[in-house]
Image (cartoon, rainbow, N blue to C red; front, side, top):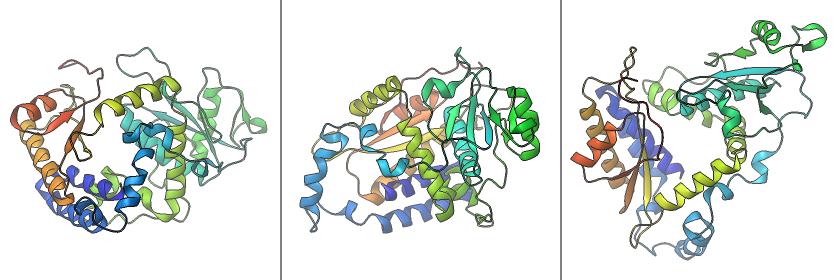
Length: 335
């Protein structure tokens, strides 16, 4: 899985010629990290052990969201009773919100603050707080309530704010109120992630590999584990059903899944759609084939995450890739 994650980094590199070096570097690292993936079936001393473990993964009947996280990933990081809160807002898509929330979580946990999440309504839904619709609470993090009267920050009398608005005003001075974007110094105190490398956009910004830093990972892993554990039962059931249907084996060899993402927008005024969307999609398809060859995968399916269904149409019309996407609501063109 670690090797595949590294290989997936290569797919982001197709956005521009300048990032071709990043894609090649990702593929080289993937080949170094996954020597056993390229061996013939049955090769190596661990083949029998690997076959014996098959029944324990979701291909053998179990559900992926039931296998991880384990108890050790969910140990509390903070005391049960909060001494100070941090307000984390959010807008745009789920991926945007989650990536920002992870950084705010690292920022808050490393400074001893509990997190309150307020994800505003999503376009096309009547939900007031999207976070509470998808996830439950855990010790260090909970969804914001409509009438908050127990949020803590030193800026309020006695350290407890009578209203949510009072907390927001007082928390600004403490840098504990963030409507969307995390601060630049979201890392734990004293930790600085290298920013000068030419591949910074690919390796750190876009793919979040700064979360693998030794002083950040313990918080980022706790966040990821807690988010999976906190999924609402109905959401978890739908996710497991999707995995069982789409991630199942195709033929003799296990099917590998490679994910790609196209953020083309829907004709908004700020314009995310590239000048030649077809070119971007086809370059991504070529990168998928390179990753497949580099890792020696025989059966590959491509999970496409996109806000524009035209990316799926292009892949199905102009490539032989086996592509699929999760059924979802998408804004109409120009919406």
